[in-house]
Length: 515
Image (tube, rainbow, N blue to C red; front, side, top):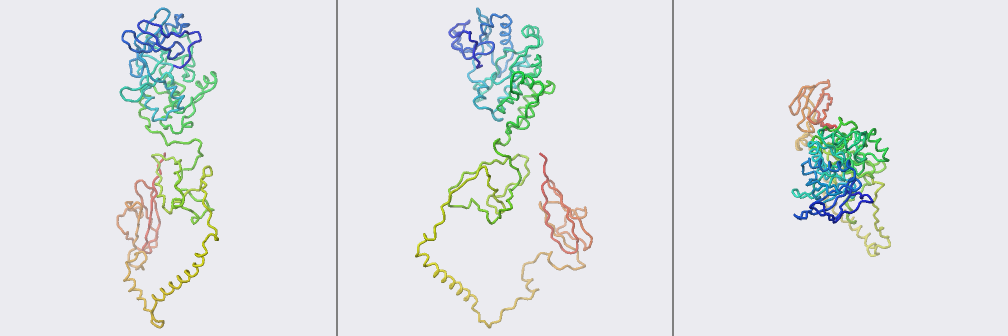
């Protein structure tokens, strides 16, 4: 509660109302001012809401004010402000409630702009449970917004929890509708404009799902940092009635997609298309993704999410420089990782940084590092003594190399060169070669040496599965179909002519999963 009281509203600090002394004014709302007060007998501090003097003279306003206390007192829940007493003393109507030492969610959003999903989820869940308790007691809040959600320290969990306050325009259940109808004129619009459900804009607010709509606006504001509908009073009313809200992820991409769908469902124009109860909404909030999507920088230009980057045609691999190998420069800070990944991304992991098959992408024109390197020394800077010794040392090295070669090949010129063994003996002295290279016998079967990736893939020869390794087939001029398949991979078929032993290396590609 942060609005200013009416200009002619006196400050009642120091006044004694019943057993409570008003110490100082904490804030003001549309109907009354809230004071820090102290019980004079038991020395306990509480908060007291006093109806504005200009409204206290109106019997209907006084009844509505007391109905707020009655509505709030009907809801017994840790997330709803507790009402201790209600009374009328002289010209002052007031009720006593628990003192909340904290600040409201609206002030938190003004300071931080928006809350990320991991921080917002427990707070939103508490608000949903508090509103469900109010609906179960027959009370429709009708003014759900951040400023009516006070954040206070949690004595049990050690963090903070939410207290829903200000049931000033709350609607009671059907058995008390007669009293409520006396206080609310037909067609009167109640609630805060930015959080107003379409049916409230049309003058009807009996349905608890109007709180569901306002809760959807509150979720939109908390997670995106802005309201779904803005403009003048007439424009906002028209948008609530006719215009669909923008998609939250188009404003803040880090919002999980399941949470976005839940927000848009709460903001349906027709109540029957919204979640039927706050309890079901709370269950959906609890089941939503606990972690946000990968962070997104809206100022960064979109980039393709392909695999390893390709080099421009004008750059050859010989001209590439591995910056990790430079030892003459201080280490540069690692670049920010702006490549988004997801849990269902089935791409192969990137190869190690020093793998020669992986190249660095071309520099980003928006962000390039320019490193100044010292120019090479001039030839004149080399000492003359070193230049004078270079040629003699080079000649000496050549002579040493020639002498070494002559010592190795020191046989007489006329000595016969030893004969190379005959081909069969040479082959017998070498390790056995690939059977695919041996000459074939016309009467022998043909061997098909099939290597597969993955190794446990199934092999079919003309649609007949075989486990034989290597595969023996009759020599023939007819084509054979070799099909390889494995779970999680796309099958592949090759056609061979069994005229000679063949080695086949068949690698399967992983099946692409739909997102």
